[in-house]
Length: 338
Image (cartoon, rainbow, N blue to C red; front, side, top):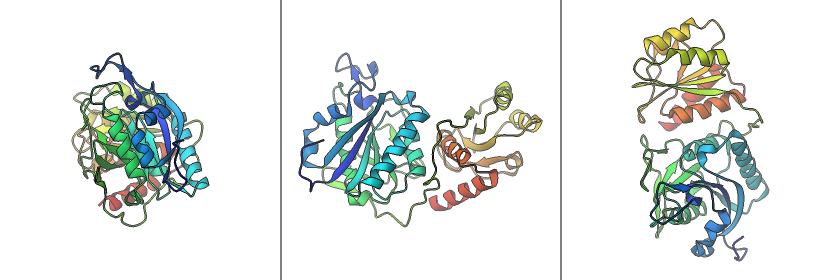
C-alpha cells in the first residue's frame, strides 16, 4: 500500500506478470527476456511519482507470460474485481498489469462480465522493465491516471498503451515489436492521456454487460478456432467434430468466407454440430450475414476478431445459450456499435 492520506483516490492494482514485469540479462535485450519476474509491488517502487496520484493497493494474482494464462486465472481475476467493487464503494477503479500477448482477450472477457461504471484499465509493455527506454513505467503511470479519472467512468474496460486509451472491443495487438503495437482498427482509440490529463468524451448511455451475473465454472467448454487458407486441411474439421468441441470459430478468408470443402465437411457431419461463429482473418472490417454460410448454422461475428469471438462463444455456452439467443445477442451488439 502506498503511504498516503485517506483522501487520495483509492485504486486496486492487480498484477499478473507479462513483459511489463519482465527482466533481461542486459539493458539492450529487447527480445530475449523473461516475462513475469517482478512483483507488482516492485513496479510501484520504481514509480514514486504515483504517490502523488493515488493510494494504491497491490495484489499479485499471478506472475507469468500472458501466453500461459488459463481459464482459472480469468476466474480468479473476475471474482476479485467483482468483490472489490461490491465491497469497497470508495474504490475508484482497478488497474491490471498484463502481458501484451493476450491482453486484448482478457480486456474483452472483462467487458462482457464486469458491470460497474468505475474504470477497469489494463496495461502492459512492449519492452521489459530492464530495457533502455522501457515503456512500462510510463504506461503504468498513465493507466493509473485513467483509472482515477471521472472521465473514464462508464466507458467499460479500457486498455492504456503508448498514451492511447482503447476500448476493449476494438483494441488488438498489431505488431510483434514497437511501443505502438496496440491499435483499434475499426473504431480507433477512444482518447488519449498525457501530462495535461485524461482526454475522453463523456460516456454515452448505459453500457450493455450481457454476462454480468454469469457464474464462471471450474470446467469450461472446449471452443476451437480454425484458420482459413488455400486448400485447408479438412481432416482438422472432422477431428474437432469427433473430439466433441462445443463451439467453433471459423476464421474465414475475406469477409469470413469458408471454402467449398469446409462447407461440405460441415454438411457431411452426421452428428450434432457445435455452436459456430464466423470471423475474418483480415484484421479489420465486419463479417455480415450470408445465406450460403447461415444455412450451415454459422453466425457472423461482426467486427470481433477470431480470439474475441471465441470468448463470446465460451461465455454463451457457459450461459446455456442456444443459437437463436446468441444470434440476438450478436445483433444487439452490432446495433450498439453502430
